[in-house]
Length: 409
Image (cartoon, rainbow, N blue to C red):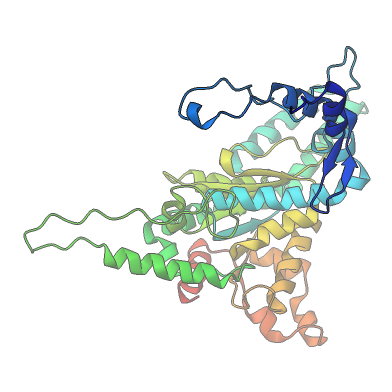
């Protein structure tokens, strides 16, 4: 007579597990308890006569073990949600990487592959703002008692305005140039006629563009044969998270718009450039701001989806340079010169395309504050490094200088 298996024997079996080597090894008692339950609930194998008939089976457990339930559990927080950690010195590499990746992803998702960068002083004011501030300072001066702090502040404000009055002219010219470049880029569909070769030299992008252009010719409607024009097939697009090849479903449409104005997102000449792009119907522009205690947010002419704020200057500079196809430098101070010389160094050393067009708007200013001739005569740079720069006060000359070189590139 075949004896039945006792509960103790089942428990002993459940507390061990036999592997391929034939030995039985102990396992976790909690797992053993679950295993014992499964053995007790296991239905008797159906006899050959009962095959094909329905038999009741126990439901599979939802988890591999009993869920843990605590009346007062110890709270936890995932590392990527821990603000104290993310803002600590230990997480600095993560913050740097985040500034790089989020910027590249969003630019790609919006089809940004070519930019014209505008640098310039944040202290400049357009004519309307200048006159408003001047009238306010004059009123405060006339209403203040001589020798009081209010009188001194009003005098200082008027003195500062007098020092920057000459820049009003270049605010308007910066706006005009940004407007014309944006309009030209949309009308000329720069993406078809110019190679985008800033810092990025990804050859796969060039091959992809060639395939897209070939595809356009293949599916072009044929007229005169009595047939309806062929329905163009949708172009291949990449997910928004793919950095190097565009992102959204209309990435090639926006890419074909070509050249986007990019600035530091602040006031002054940066605001003038963003405003010029916004003057054009359908014009969008980029603002790459930096967190500063005396600047809150970006100027209102930056496109919402292309507004960035950086913590680190070097990641901001990299993002500005990555898709740069041309550079316009309006009058500026330390920050403007820092950014300008960095781009000139990248151009000189071949880290960016050596034929990058660079315009210095405000000829008298730039020839006065920097002795370019002395640079070359001292042998620290080549004369051609200076000759390749355009010093001008003329918007038409600047526009033609940039567009002709973009087309040649």
